[in-house]
Length: 430
Image (cartoon, rainbow, N blue to C red; front, side, top):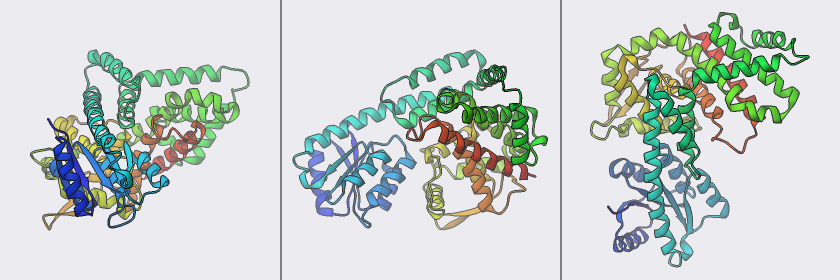
């Protein structure tokens, strides 16, 4: 099957020449004049590779397109071609996920490299998509007898060299979900071992004092939430005493896990009745089906555009992708009343999409979403969105495959402050 390439360039003459050349080399080609058109084509044509110009309606529209395209499909291969791009813009394109950056000025000399890059990108896409499908299957395993093999499979995937960063992060999150019980036991054992060492008997008292001061309703939390918070705060205080060597080895397994578990456990307990009512209401499934395309089961283009606008209006990128939203919707439809958000990211997406009142347009008709989750206590909608953003950010930052440029102590400090912010919101839930 030929590789389908989407060419995005505002110069029709260049587009036509490029298209003819690629057809001669047995590529299938679709086109778009600018980033807005390209997003529509991405949804309708499902190309294998995106090739985009940098400067179109704006000097950096190509970079914006890469960012948006990766939000739709994080694995989509992208090649940026530019006549005016600087080294800095090329570096940004690479950071955003472009597999190659080629200058238009000498494109004829590098045309073979371009074709090779496109073909290699398609091969990598097929491989990573297959691995991501395996991760999704492992994530959904509930039978305890199958869990061990799923854990081994995820560990095997994480050991692969040159694995796509998105597959790495999704595999890690799935692994943590499957290993929750073991991770709690391991973390508690490490905490007991560290507390048994000389001179540390006063640490627990300090930990309790800090938590009571930071979280007004701390004493009302579920015992499991309190235990995890104490453990996380204990490790946090120890890292300030022992430096980065201690925190580097304990970070993902102990501190990050414990802070996230406390928030997730407490949030799910307080939202349990509302979530169950949401999942046992027939209108819930009608609404979700309306947000998905019936044939492809991708997000409906209008809801997709709403999510993209939501991010642009607030001037930031949420730490989730359109693919994450789609998978969350699919799991709700599949499991119905048995659905349980598998992590803070899924919980945040549910709250963002169903825990507030808003409207989006579909074929010029308003579709109203009137807080079907029945969220109470956190108002207005901007506050609900902030709460969802914090939950998603907490899981995102815990993942060691994300932001490797930030050292472990900085990550722990961010996790800690975000945890306290999340818990303050949770305490407001009515």
